[in-house]
View 1 (cartoon, rainbow, N blue to C red):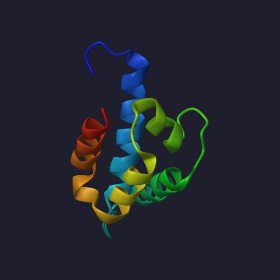
View 2: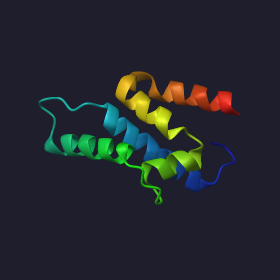
View 3: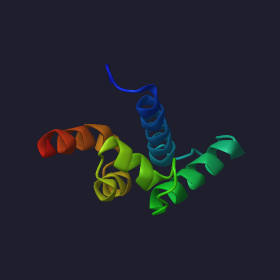
View 4: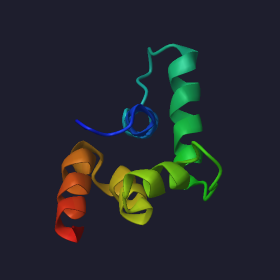
Length: 92
């Protein structure tokens, strides 16, 4: 992210945190807050909200394919970051 505006780093951190909380499934002995964050993150990712800091908006700002990101969260959570970076590099 060298040379990018700090705001882009903030958007990347929001997206990363949301995806991380969604793919980390809570364990039985986790605190209730962990279950809440997981559920809220899944709802956030499923939303098509285009307002600032919504999932789709964050993806658009970062040039991330939101449909691919959603699919990877559901089907390949362990590889989501690698797959998204690879897809982005192929697009340009």
